[in-house]
Length: 85
Image (tube, rainbow, N blue to C red; front, side, top):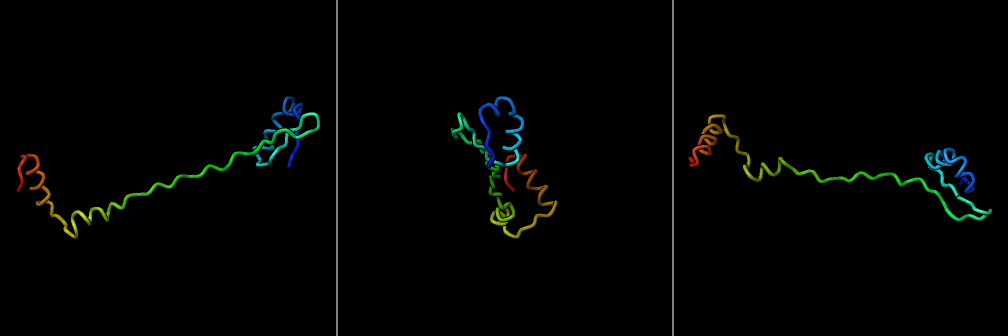
């Protein structure tokens, strides 16, 4: 663990900041007594988002049914006409 005085912070902050950037903890002293510690930031954690299982949703909705292009066209036409086939 590194040690720096208040004077070091004032006059040589770049050096003290480099120590912290390297991951070292720095104790700050005033009149020879430790009164603070500079710690490097904790590593950022990535949040894991649950991804939806789209294939399972499709299978639940439609089962194993596969529509032909003519069936899809007929369903679209029926939607546009506002009626059902």
